[in-house]
Length: 399
Ligand SMILES: Nc1ncnc2c1ncn2[C@@H]1O[C@H](COP(=O)(O)OP(=O)(O)O)[C@@H](O)[C@H]1O
Ligand SMILES: CSC[C@H]1O[C@H](OP(=O)(O)O)[C@H](O)[C@@H]1O
Image 1 (cartoon, rainbow, N blue to C red):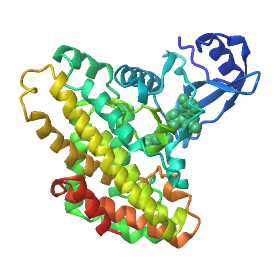
Image 2: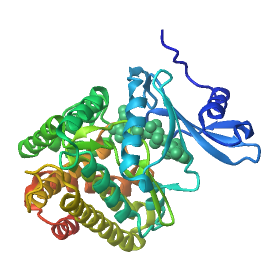
Image 3: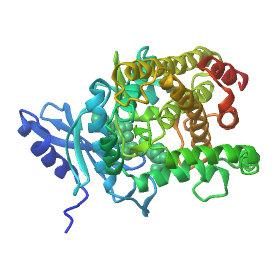
Image 4: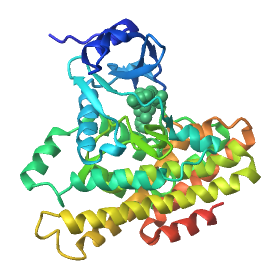
């Protein structure tokens, strides 16, 4: 019989006292539920001084932002905790530390990052973290290289692929990224004024063929243990520090999906900035975002190549020049996946604050149109955009 029950604040405090690993557990006295994501409960646990000390996160048996009409596996808590534990092994400096997790209660206790801020909010407000892009590139290189066939023994790799089979969460991505925006679907969510642009997505055969190829890669290319949803709302930043959280979509998939999700979210911020900061103020923020994308990719590619040179264990994959061939494919995939993120966050179920919180209606429509057009261009042109500089030039071409 399952012991699952949905935690109250009182339960969360008791749980943190027992499993938080703190030297003074009795000082934990209060909890506040602060979850602002689409899926789960997140409790901050405070001590007698009112300081938040540790986090308790619990999966609900349904999608939080929709309600009980959309049931969802509790196993996502295991997948999130195990993905973060695995990533922490390879990149502790940029991964939240999981203290404890319990599969039956679908709950985990983790490091409190209240000293940090969610990167998305900072990007929207124009607060710049000069090291964040390269730190994210480092996180992606370390976690993806060390969970790939370059590094893992073939038996270990296959065992890991099996351990991280994540069909229900992958199905959400498969539907939300690659199906819904390109068909009439009740989950889609966009202003009526955008109907012509959205209808054009449904009628574009070249686009839908390219999206099918991306979905096919998402289905079938078990290249590395992905975070699976590495958007700027799943990243905490502080001066000189960056930490990834929220990895319940983790599974073995194409490396370009994580890189593309990260790039896509920087581009969503690029599209929304005029609505957030005003057209004049946005210009330098936009230049910064493009520089961030170049920095992210350059750091990722350099670090991955370095790791491949120094630590590849497979004799064939170690052949000089192979890693750089692999990275060319990762780059093309990443541009395509970034395009799908731009489109699904503009017309699909789940939007981003970078554009959603724009007050002026006309400005918001213009930013959404921009994101859709840029997304389409990236998906179709991905095979021809062969460098980060070429990407920057293409993005500027679209406004
Ligand atoms: N380790 C943490 N430290 C501090 N706050 C956190 C931590 N993890 C999550 N949060 C807070 O909870 C919110 C939701 O967490 P998230 O993991 O994104 O939930 P979901 O899985 O529902 O998307 C975050 O935006 C952040 O405000
Ligand atoms: C029905 S889940 C929609 C959407 O929510 C997830 O994001 P988060 O957990 O960070 O809120 C993920 O991006 C899913 O595609």
